[in-house]
Every structure is written in structure tokens, then in C-alpha cells.
Image (tube, rainbow, N blue to C red; front, top):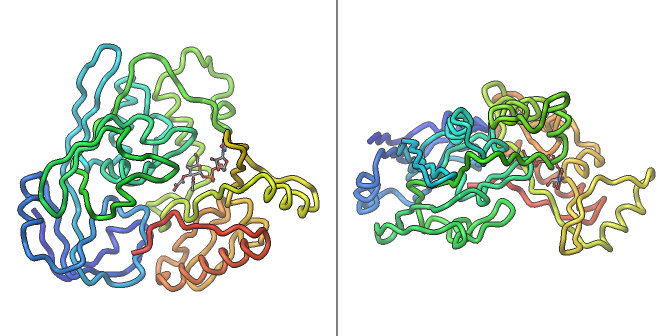
Length: 337
Ligand code: EPU
């Protein structure tokens, strides 16, 4: 167990905000977690994963917990394979290992930053696949009682970047997650530009590693490299609006072209990136913060020394401009602490 008072969190949030917490505790087992929860800790208590979807607004007055429960085990279940993954495992390490073993299921989630525990909370998603589609069970400790609780995926209320764990914030701490993978050939290539990235390939002969490579290429073209520039990935969720609202937006655009996806319930999803771009924010700089040129859905810590205030000022400006131009309220995807 690691326990550090007055801990500098800059290496624990991918935005690279220079903030601290009163106490930082990293545990390596369920037993350690239970004993920590029985202590009188500096309040409030906040559990982080890879810190890749967070914006600390300033110093955190309480305790930050982090799981270092590791281990990836694969168990055969006929054609299927159950992967049991510690909450502290880097999610992409799990994806890479699954692909190396020829297992299908998580290859489209390649290169998403963060850890396995948080993947089950955020219901991370990319290229037509969400964690909730492949999660089998989520193993948790209830923070107030120290009791172990197991949820089947069907009990996790998974939705777009949403789960029961987001609504019952702090109630459960994820300790491990099982994912249902398969040896059976079943790539998911329907999303956007995946097929284009695989052009010239015999699709019938694809392996999970081939798809992983294509996804990595697509992501690297658009998204900032976390090793080089601080960000928290997509800053805003993609809004879903009524068909009538969409038609009004369509009529207001000079060329009459708006990228969109019709959803089965008749509503329309419009990429927030397009709205932000149309409002002229691509590359906009405020203090040390910038709207990323290659992907306006991402706000980056461009100077390396952006303050939370810089990021929030840019966020507020973007929200106001999109609201005034399109009548759509963007909601941040990044959690503000
Ligand atoms: N879309 C479809 N079907 C497609 C292609 C796109 O429904 O075949 C929808 C998407 O759901 C989205 C919109 O069209 O609403 C735009 O899609 P685009 O591929 O441009 O992605 P994005 O909006 O820039 C989202 C995620 C990314 C993820 C990509 C790829 C959010 C907030 N962001 O970005 O996630 O990598 O799709 O799937 O949903 C992140 O969360 O940090 C992140 C990078």
C-alpha cells in the first residue's frame, strides 16, 4: 500500500493539472481496500482510475484512492473466454493481450486511456462498441459497509457514457471486472471509417490484432498523444436532439449539410465536434487551454501549464456559443472534481 499526505496529482490526471490532495492512498488488494475504508480518512473521499476523464477544479481537500489491483486471467467457457481483469489494470494492456490471444470483443476499444475499473463505471466506448456490451460482471466493494457486491452487466444500467455507478457516485468501488470475449470471428466494422482504414485487406481473414492496428491508426490521426499533450479525451458528450430541432439547424446552415446519425427512437445525434467547429472554435486558445485543431471535441492543456480556470473558461465559452448558435446545451463528458 502507498500512502502519501499532500500528494501532487499532476501525474495522476492526464490533463496534467498541477493540483494536490490532502491524502493519496493506493491499495493492491480487496483486503487493503476494506481496511482503508474502515479508517477515519480526510474527507471527502474520491476514487480515481487512470485520471483520464477528470478535471480537478483546484486542490482536493480530502483523500484520493487509487486501485493497484492488477492481474488479467483468461478462463475458457466453450467458444467464449471470460477475462477477469483487476480494476487497476491499464485498460489498453488488457485489450492488447486479448487481441494477441486472438480473442474478439474489445479490439475496437484499443488505445482508450484509463483503467479497467473505470471502464465499467464510464461505460467507455469507441467505434461502435461500448464496454457494457462485453462486460460480464462487475465486482465491487460497497464503500459504506465494506461488503462485496457483484453486478451482472444487465444490472449496471449501461447507456451512452453512463451507468448506475455514475448515479450512485462513491457508493461502490470496482475491484475487478469480467469481460466475455470470443474466439469466433466477429469483427465490428460498421462504424465510420474502420473499413476505409482496412482497405485492401481480406476482411474474412482479419484477426483482432489487425482491427486493433486499424483503430490505433484512426485514433492517432485525430486524438492528441497523451504522452505529448495533456487532455481528457472528448471533453463534451455528443448531443441527441429531436428531429424538429435538427431540421431547424439544417435550415439555418448555408450549405444545408449537417453530419448526423438518426437514432432508432426518431431522435438525431449531431457530433458536438461539428458544432464547436462551426462556431469557430477549432484551435481557439484561452490562457494555456486550446480546442484541439484535429478534433474540436477535445480541449488540450496546450501550454502544459493551463490552469483549471483556463480550461473552464474555454468550456463555458464553447457551451455559450453552441447554445446561442444551435440552441443545444453541450454537457461535459469529463468529470469536474
Ligand atoms: N457515429 C455513428 N456512427 C458512425 C460514425 C459516427 O453513430 O458510423 C456518431 C458517433 O456516435 C458520434 C458522431 O457520429 O455521435 C461523431 O462520430 P466521430 O467518429 O466523429 O466521433 P466523436 O464524436 O469525435 C466519439 C467518442 C470518442 C470515440 C469516437 C469513436 C464521445 C464523446 N466521444 O467521438 O471517445 O473515440 O466517437 O467512436 O462520444 C472519449 O470519450 O474520450 C473519446 C475519444
